[in-house]
Figure 1 (tube, rainbow, N blue to C red):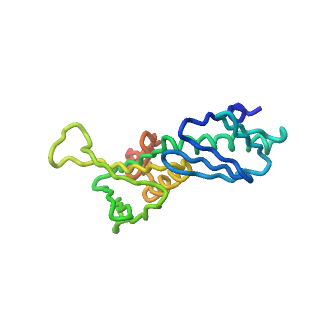
Figure 2 (figure 1 turned 30 degrees about the vertical axis):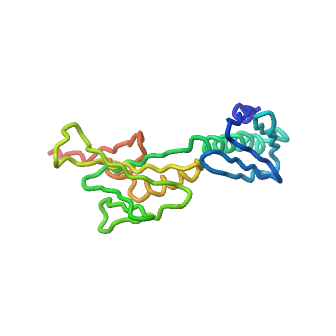
Figure 3 (figure 1 turned 90 degrees about the horizontal axis):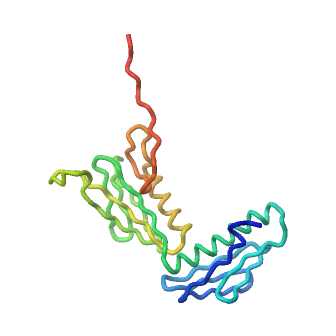
Length: 193
């Protein structure tokens, strides 16, 4: 039995879960999500819990079991708490701003990169002085905060923003997730005579 798949999902107060014709709908204080699961999975909603069962022990069904359960759990968490992913800008002169319905990135190209903000996620840009000095000419660090109720969409949008300028493996300049560790490569070794 799947360790994740066999766990029942508690339905918190203020969340409504409906299951009809292979589609599960979750409605909560932050919004509404729906998910059409694979026809082989058996979903039961009763007594304040959602349970997912599989018809057999075939490898395919075992794989679907835990995945289906986790998607439903993420939907319930999304409509109650929401999800957030932070993308940080590292580089001299790198800046981010919001212009109407677009995110504008200045990340070392000859032009500004304009990313249209999707309707189902919220994007904010926060800036703070970087370093310990706090002087006038000190460089600012920009953080792009992507938030929404659908975990997959928040991660997808954050990945698309990061793809604009992935971190350089030599100096670390670029866009990276908050807390991401960059594996640096060694630079050129000096010529020895």
